[in-house]
Image 1 (tube, rainbow, N blue to C red):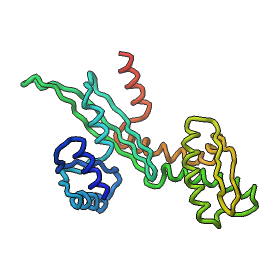
Image 2: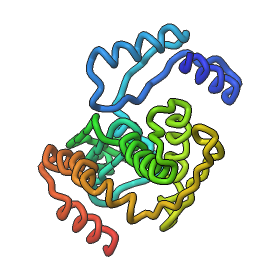
Image 3: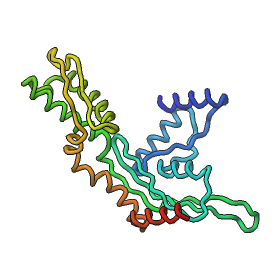
Image 4: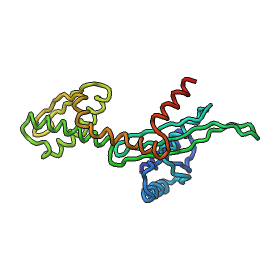
Length: 230
């Protein structure tokens, strides 16, 4: 259904029929998962030309309007809801000595992934903060109220987004559970405290991608600095 809807939107924008697609998928997708995506594409009335890793797709899009006087290495990092991935890509612009035409060569040299960490885990920990605050004030356990837990999940996502740009946020839910209104202030420092053990998990895909590429973060940073200063 999602692919059929995307096909409909694309045809409206392009004002022509859309039949062939190249779809980006996470690099950690198994062959079974990739086959499932291909089947869904076919059911929607489209034809799969290729499935490519999402990091590769970002690299291609980035290089389309740029040239690279000297080779560059870039880290493409994506922390999604249910997984984290990092891709190390190299970009080199070269000229064909025979035709004189120039083109950019893109190579993915390393990939790192974590299927267990992501934004959903941050939402869960934020909800735990709100649960503890409600239980302390009401002297009742909101975990026993399913509707209340759903409300807290939605509010946790909202508060997390606010704390990404602010040092504190106020969570407010009218009639959260048992006709009890809920209001509490959450600070970014408190949220960071309950998530501090995740820091290494969010960084590990970058470390894995660099190790697979035979590079270090320092070397990439130094290379970019020398390029920007040249």
